[in-house]
Length: 449
Ligand code: UDX
Image (cartoon, rainbow, N blue to C red; front, side, top):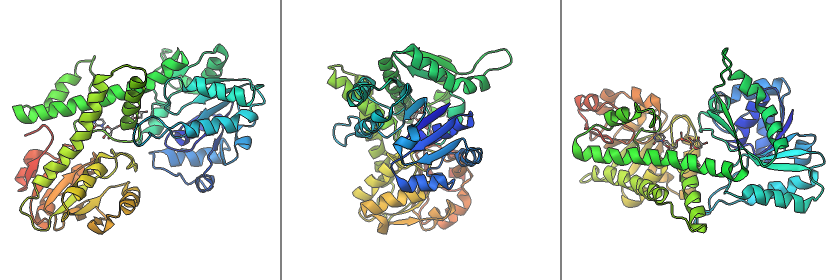
């Protein structure tokens, strides 16, 4: 089946490579020529574990190609997947749909055969109706069905999540469109079916608006679950309980489950913050109050400032404080610094303590973080380290901000010798408190003692 994908970002590219790996003929379209040129050379334009290898393999087999031309890309395509960005409005947080509409307007005149147009971008409820109206208004002869096909890919694990989805949600108001999408995913469903004929992936057919809602509801629930465990960590700090034990005990209840119960500095990334705020905006637009979502948004925001204040309070009486920072990405496994709790905490630190200097390291996100620091004009106060051990030299406090597993191997004894003062603020509970104290540090974690 020939499939066109509009957008080669964190959703479009892994989806395109995944569909090519399933044996489809995929053309990825992007208006940025620089991105397309890199991809044509087999250079991935974002970090995702396993993506580069799959891209190389499917370029060699001719299953995937790249173009800036919408006309070339969608020619003879049975499915056109829209996977462009829907960034939040900086003030209202309403999802900005200009790229969706631009793609639909450019696509409409090119639809000269029955085509399923699938919105994979996270879009407000009702967007599918508007895209369908836009296409018909632009080309009243277009034979197409617009469906919602939400993605549930975690950054850093997108390749895994593409091939091992819990569910595929098809939001369609047309049997014909649903059948085309089922055909598209058939190779994946066959891969995920065991010898007993049980498939690990559930396909759910729902209305278009329900599908659009599922995406926001799922992300907002996960964000709420994270914020809940973060608040419980604060409770544990006051009551002497251990958040690791509490989370473990909670997670053994199958109705709760043990995932997304790891406390931290707050949730970040290009999805949870955006989607919770967009859902809150849509609710208010429809005169509905989502108090739980609102509390999660507000609580998550204030948590990062609270983390920064904890670091600042450990710098008191230090004339020219230096903070060694481990982690800049919004989470482990990715190079993405967008809406990163680490970057937000650093911003508070630099703003609230004019004399502080930072020494930073991240295994994958250094280049992206450097660009952000340059835009903010703060690179004169930041040293970019080559390794995690370098951040300790002459530092007064060590702050762990991203849950990279390699930080668990951090040499505490060597760091103790190289640091000026010996404090650890572990916002991800990566270090063992007893080992840190045995090495001579004063240690503060999240919800532990
Ligand atoms: C999320 C959803 O998981 C995914 O299904 C959806 O398609 C896109 O949004 P992503 O934003 O890539 O994926 O990251 P995720 O792994 O969900 O983590 C989001 C944030 O929550 C990160 O800042 C992470 O550090 C934090 N987090 C996650 C916690 O603090 N604790 C946890 O237990 C899990």
